[in-house]
Each structure stands twice: as C-alpha cells, then as structure tokens.
Length: 199
Image 1 (tube, rainbow, N blue to C red):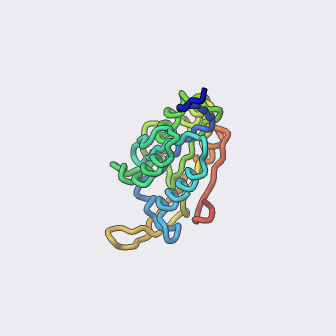
Image 2: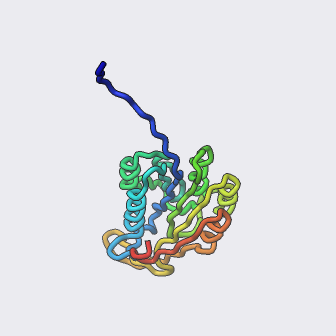
Image 3: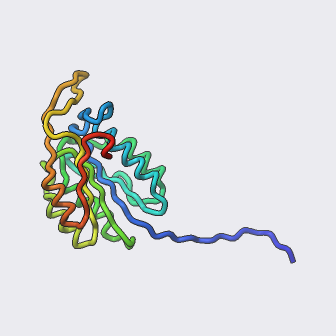
C-alpha cells in the first residue's frame, strides 16, 4: 500500500587533499600588488581557489617564525574561508620558517588516502627560522607522494611597506632557487607572481 517516509543515501566523493601554506610574516605587508599588500593579494587568490573546489578537501597552514595548522582538511569551504580571513592574527613571532611550513602541511597529509595529495606554499621570503630546512622537508614530502607547489610573492629588492603610518621602502628577497628546488624534488612546479594579474 502507499507509504510515506524518508530515505538517506550516502554519497562518497574522492577528490584531492590540499594543504595551503600561507606566509604571514611582516614582509607580506609590502604593498607591491597595488593597491593590495602581498598578504591581501594572496588571500584573494586563495579564496578564489577555494571557490573552485567541488570534492577536494582543503586545509590551511600559516607560518612566520613558526608554522601552525589553522584549519585541518575539510570539505567545509566556508570554514576554511573564515580561517583565511583571520590568518594574519596567528602571527606571534616574525620570521620565515618555510621548512616548518612544508613539514606541517606534510604531516597533515601523510595519513590521507586521497588519490592525490598536494601542498601549495605562498611566500615572499627566504627560510630564516625553524629547525628543518626546506629541501629536507621536500624530500620527506616526496617519500610520501606529496607534491609541493610553491609561489613566490612580490618583487625582488625594494618594496613599499607601511610602518607606523608612514610609507617606507624595505629590501625584500625571495629565495627562488630553493622554492624551485622544493617543487622540482616533489614533481611539482614553482610560480612567481609580481602583480595581481599573475596570480
């Protein structure tokens, strides 16, 4: 006879697991993505990237002198966006610990059974903090079949930055050689972005 009721269907999707590692050091406040700072430009492109995902789990790591997992892997993109918006609030001590950021991302991905595991690292500097150097971290990633894509943010040399309400020019340097090696070791690619159109 006719019946009413509810039925539940569980659908499983298997996508890519992606950890985003975002540099939040003070040099990311340089304003060479006119009118945006490097950090603002990076946040915008990461946000656009998240909006394009469908069945990929995404997590967020931030780093300066130390690296932190702000958001573990999840399909809840709204949560990732919320953490992204407050990413710079996590900076406790300044510096650029690229090796640590890679290691933190790899640690979050190592137990994943996704068909593909990648980390995307955005930075404007060179590794000067942390106990683990970037190339060692990259070799660890390779053994776990994790690809590390790297993006160098900003111009090399002098860049405008606001300090105590005044606009000054500071020297900034991107270690492109190391970033390229990190990606090469893991079978990924390195990108350089010097303006918003390249992101």
